Image 1: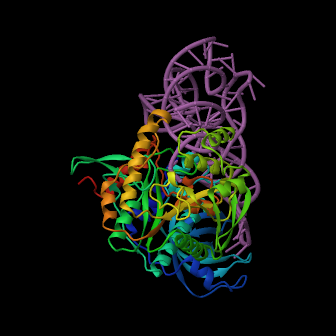
Image 2: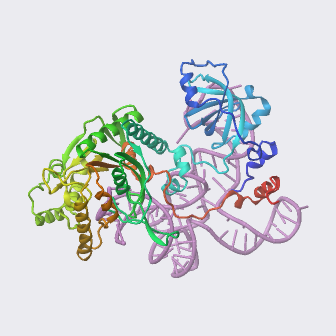
Image 3: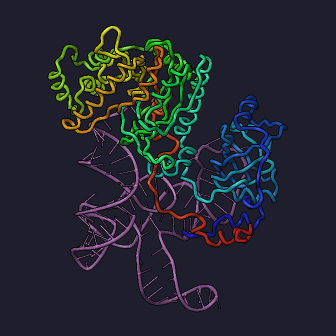
Length: 515
RNA sequence: GGGCCCGUAGCUCAGCCCGGUAGAGCGGCGGGCUUUUAACCCGUAGAGCUAUACGCGCGGAGGUCCCGGGUUCAAAUCCCGGCGGGCCCGCCA
C-alpha cells in the first residue's frame, strides 16, 4: 500500500504551495463565465482572459489533452488543459494533478466540440493539494458514519446536502429581509439561563463558575422575546439556537435553530397570515416559485406554498384526515381509542392524548403547508385561551410534508393567569411523576411573570424550525443531513504527520519550526 | 430506554448461511491516446510489520477482515462481550 507520498514530487519541482503560495488574484467566477459566455458556439473561443480558483472535482485524461472539472464555490466549470497550449514545462504540473487539488487557473472561455463551456487553461498554479485520496466519483461518500464524521466531504460531494445548506442560508436571509421590511428587529436572547422555559423539554444543565451556580442552556427564546415586547420592542424576532436534552432521531436533534417572531397588538390570526406570507416569500425568493417538487425516498411530492394555507382544527383534522371520531368522547373513551391505535399514554392530559392521536392518524397525510388550529388549552400553558371556547387555546401548528415545522399562538399576557398556569404545571409534574413517570412541564418562572406585570400588549408569537423546514423542502430523510456539523464520538485515526514522519521532518527543517 | 441491521483495500461493495490461499469495480502507480462527460485500452502494486544485509536473492519470525475473548487442527466466517454507526419504536420541534 505504501507508496512515496506525492508531496515529494511537488517539493522536487519547487512548486510546493505550502512554502510559497499565499494568495491568488481571482478575476471571475464559474457562475459569471457560464452566464456571460452562454452564447459562445461550439468550437468557438473568446480572447478574454480570466483567473479562477477552486477545487478539481473531476479529471479525464486523454494524453495530450486533459479535461478537469473545477468548482470555485459559485458553480463548476470544465477546464481544458492542452499540451500545445501549455508547453512541456507546465505540462509536468498537469501530470501531477489529482482530484481534490486546489488550483488557480488563467485562461479563456471556450466551448468544446461537444458543447461544454470551458476554460482553455494557459497557466495553472497549485494553491493546495489533497493529501488524502478522495472518495470514488460514482458512488461518492455514502457510508453514514463517514458522512457525518467527514462532513466537509459530505457537503462538498453530495449535492443534495450542499443545496440544502445553501438554501438554508437563503431562506434565513429572506426571512430577515421580509421581517425587516415589516419593521421587525432581531435581538439575541441568552443561551445561558437560570430558569428554562418557553417549551416543554428537558434542558442541558451546565455550571457557571463566575457565579457559582448551575445554569440551563436555552430550550427556547420565547420568554425573553416576550420580555422584549414588554420593553416596547413591539415587533421582534430571533433566529435562535435552541438546546433540548432529548434523544436523536430523524426529526430531532439536541441542538437546532428556529426563528421566533413576536408581534404586539396582533393575535394568532394575524400571525398565521404573517407566517404564510413570510414563508411563501422565502420559498419564492430561494427557489423561484411557490410550487416545489420534492423527491423523497423515490416518491415525488408537490408542495404549494402560495397563500392562503389550509386551516384545520386539531380534532377536525383527526376526523377529516384520520377518519377517527374524537369529538364528544369522554376521557375514558379517549384512553380506550388511543390504546386501539397502539398509542402508549404516558401523559395524562386530554390534550396530550389528542395530540398523539393526531400525530398517528392525520399528520402523515399532510403535504401542503397547513395550519392546525384549536389546540386544547391544557397543553398550551403560554397561549391565550380561546375567546370562543375556553377549553381551547388560540394556538396553531404548522405542518408540511408530514412534518411539524412550527407553532404559534396568541400569547398569554395576563400575569395572574400565567402564574396560575405555571403553578398548575408544577402540580401536574409532581402528580404525574408517581403515576406516569417523569413528564415535561414548565417550571415556575416568577421573573417572567413579573415582566408581564408591567404590562405586555396583546401579542402573537410563532416559532418555526429552520432545519425541519429545509429538510421537508429538500426531501432529506434525516435532520442530521441539514445540520452543518453534528456531534460525533471520537475515533482513532492517524494524521499524515504521524504516518509520514519524513515529511514532518522536512517541514520542521524547511520552515525552521524547531527554532 | 426496547428491537432490528451494518462494520472487509483510499471509495462502493462481494465473500460469512455451509470454517480451510481475502476478492471485484472504481481510485492509485506505469504506459498509450489532442474534444472528453463515471472517457477508453494495456500493464501493475496495495489489506500486515519487524530483524539482519549496501542492495538483491534465499531463509525466518509475525499476523488488526472494528476491538477483545471463546470454540476448533484451522475463524473474516460460528459463539460471547465491547466499540462505532444506521433504521424502527417510546418522549421533546
